[in-house]
Image (cartoon, rainbow, N blue to C red; front, side, top):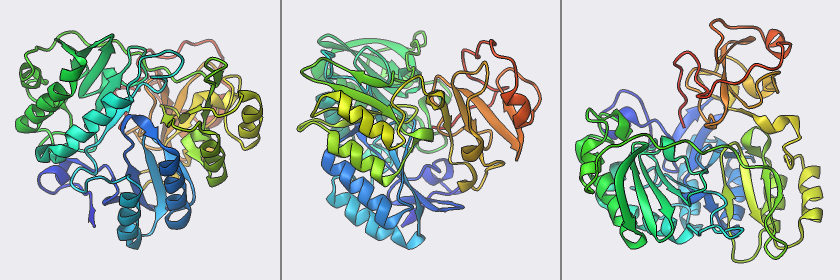
Amino acid sequence: MRRGREGGKGQEAVDACPGILTLHPARDGHVARIRLPGGYVSRAQWTALAALAGELGDGALDLTARGNVQLRGLPAAAGAALARRASSADLLPSGPHDRSRNITGSPLAGLGGRPPLRRLVRALDAAILAEAVLAALPGRFLFAVDDGSGGAGLAASDIGLRRAGRQVEVIIAGRLAGVRLPLAAAVPAAVTAARAAVACGVGGPVTRIADLADGGARAAAAIGGSLGPRVGASDARLRLGPQGAAGSPMLVVAAPLSRLGRRQAALIGGLLRAGEVLRLGTAGRVVIPLAQPPTAALALLAGSGLLTSDGDERAGVTACSGTACLKAAADVRALARPLPGHPRTHWAACPRGCGRPPDAELVVAAGPDSFLISGQPTARPLAALTSSPAGRAPSPSGSLNGLGGAP
């Protein structure tokens, strides 16, 4: 079992993202990240994930900002069993591509009359697995597949496909590439652009297309395009509660601080409609296409501690792993709470801001009880933040004095 590390050569020099075969050391054990292309999870896969968390990890499922799942508290010796069982559950179709299958999707696609994306996501995933050279793509590289309604993270993607009727618009490094293609040509174009990105150095000196010296111009040219304006961000978190028509009801719920207990995971999986998949979105959102009317399901999920309404004051609060991380400066999972005047905040234990949803302001720990928040030049104690006057509009970018956020 390999472990990601800083300071090596090639991909490992820049790619510290965990996978199934590449575990990440932390204070609470080792961390595995399991890629779920599109954020789609079948009932069988969901059951397998919960079992892996309970039998090998600390029992919880951490939902990432990209619609993946992390297992925490793994012993170092669990790597072989994790890989074997993940493979049998169709969660690890290719060892070499373990960290390359980063595909986000619009979480409501195919529901409520929206255009479907599942076939396009599956085709893209299969094409990535079929290309040996794309195993070099690092864990931070992102493909985004959007149904036109948002939620897939196109603005932060390396290669994006935005469906528009029977055509697909291609995005490179979060910028319009000036290329529209028939649906059947979208996946080959994405693979061509990804191969060009690898040839230009992605997976070696850099992890993202935008970090290349030309900003991605050669990747765009490889599919007959050129870099244009940045695509508009449309990645606000999903509204919580019942949605959809009477004949195809669905619920959107959220895991508090994006962390699900085993009982909560079991409840969610048991409600999934036959033939459907769960869809994982940003800020711990889970879309559940229901097999029953939503009323009883809503009470059941709310009773388990899940967030089921935007009226819940916790709905706007997320956090990183806190003191479980070796770089943490504060126990942000214990301290995270709503702040007056800041409706959506992501509490981060260090300046990396890992896991920040795109619509959230960063609250970054500078010490055990000292925090920086957007637009404020100096750190402040928690008591001062919670008593600050309401009414100040949040920063549009959620930036914090130039501090970024890792996915």
